[in-house]
Image (spheres, one colour):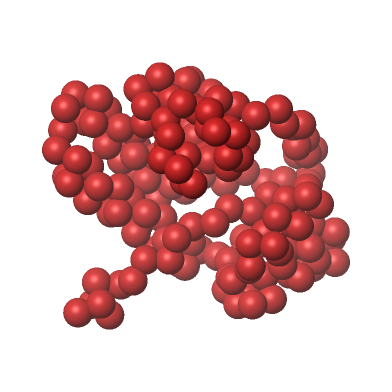
Length: 164
């Protein structure tokens, strides 16, 4: 997976994750990447510096759940290019996000509102290296990224059973 800093033609800056650079190129060419601020689909990569870590600093773990989520997202994008019903594609997307949310909840340690502090402690080696999730403000998330700490935001979906 690769995270790109992106710009729309109105210079709104945002980031998005892609399987690889080819996936970004294909999705952008088909208008599938849209600005979350204005909905514009004329998207380009922003200038960004790479984050380089040694093998001892980072363990890369790709679970079966992550692979399944990536494959489902790619299938949804392919279906959209082939003229699939947008409602069905949206449903597929929601199912993928739900699976990813469950994967995070099942495999990561929940640290609640202490997320930013715990992420810093792990990054600096003051806490055990492990995957965590919790709550952080947009300011805390931006500060972590400025400090070179990789974080991603996953929307919290309501459990269908809880929503009914």
